[in-house]
Image 1 (cartoon, rainbow, N blue to C red):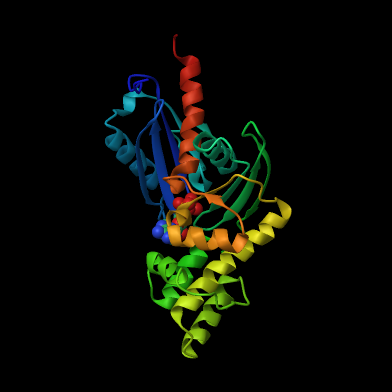
Image 2 (cartoon, rainbow, N blue to C red):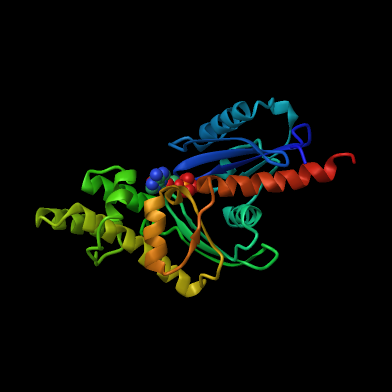
Length: 267
Ligand code: ADP
């Protein structure tokens, strides 16, 4: 069937702690955009909206619904509806991979494990947003301590066995990494140890919400194939990583918008 680009259009905007994402949807994704959230979530939300519409080649007056999710969703007054990121991640993951029973999402400042039932509805979830352990922030601080980029950190980690880090806390782990470097320990082993720490954090969460197949891995970190492989090996779990893992929450929001716009459109 040819894509129905003349049909109702919805937009999902996910204003995360670190990155703001937008997806423009008809019966397929027409365009998407991402920008750092920075100190002004409202500005970031409006910016990704403009950029995603431009990428889609769609004028804003053609949009039937704009759904907001993510921690910054309260900061924008333009939303048709606001929905939690748990619901949006579940919807986006189920849409992309209907066999999904578990979503692992690692964002900039939180990580969560969401359990889905066979219909794709949320049956349970656990979220760590109290500390940076096991989050994108943790990874960024660790990469800076090793003086490497996030891409380099993943590539390094892929080449070595992990040097165990005793602390999952970002502040203590940073001191530990600096100490290991001072003792001449190779960066690659430390990098692998850092990824292992993220897997251990996920293990703790999975103690409360077990990882049932199929497990889909979403969020900004999941863009890094080396890190995905390392985490999958540490968790002894196959991880299904979608093509654009950072956009899954925004996609879920856009899907809710699609539901709203199609239920209002004449047959
Ligand atoms: P949030 O929704 O909480 O803002 P995202 O899911 O958008 O978070 O992910 C943002 C995080 O993704 C950042 O902390 C960043 O460190 C991480 N990230 C982005 N690109 C990469 C990459 N190539 N490798 C590892 N981590 C990455």
